[in-house]
Amino acid sequence: MHSLQILVLGLMFTMTGAFASEAPLFDVHIHYSHDVWDKIPPERAILKLREAGITRAMVSSSSDEGTQRLYRAAPDLIIPALRPYRERGDLETWMHDESVVPYLEQRLERHRYAAIGEFHIDGEEAELPVVRWTVQLAKRYDLMLHVHSDADAIERIFKQDSSARILWAHAGFENGSRVREMLERYPNLWADLSFRWEIHRQGRFTGVWKALLEEHSDRFMLGVDTYTPLRWLQIQETLDWYEALFASLSETAARRIRHDNAERVFAFYSSRSD
Image (cartoon, rainbow, N blue to C red):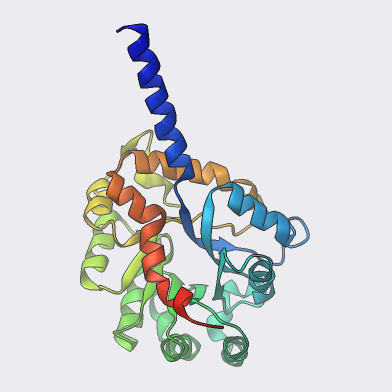
């Protein structure tokens, strides 16, 4: 190969890499909880998101004050979601705590949100009164539910409200075949891919995942999941993993998961007035 051809190819690869790094990212799984506030103040947190190329981020926190701090710092970037947790320790008990209901109601009347969640339940916990009321609040306020659960709990929520819109955190940590079954059964179900490292290793997909992400590329979204202060320091590392994933997908599928799906699904929030 002539040196001129090598130079041209090198420029092409450089331009392609630059384009990929500048592609907009919509992250649907960011937390800014009380253990982060002092270590990474709102202005610094916003800067970290922007520097990583994230142009929109759905944020929830324990307590909701963290979300509101980020939203005040950058309303053009932050889309608030409301967790039922007043502190991170509520994760395992919130579904049994009836005081959660008035807390959610008060916050929903005071602020504007795109979703309730991320919240954690499994199986029959979806039938508990507090969870049922949370599902009804989402319906009343026309909000998404961001649910960290197994497939059983998702099915139980859809039985309560067949019109619910659910973003399934981590695709439930279920295997690809089960995720496919759920997506094909429930048209109002989407999934974020946070912490699903096992679906793509060393440039190759495992199991049914490549076909699943291509065939249902309109149903998956990107998420870093900054659930601890350390995760805020790993944003770029996590996004690098996503880029390796996207490199193995078609351009259309990659663009949808990077940005377009979330932009479309959460357009209802952007169209509302304060």
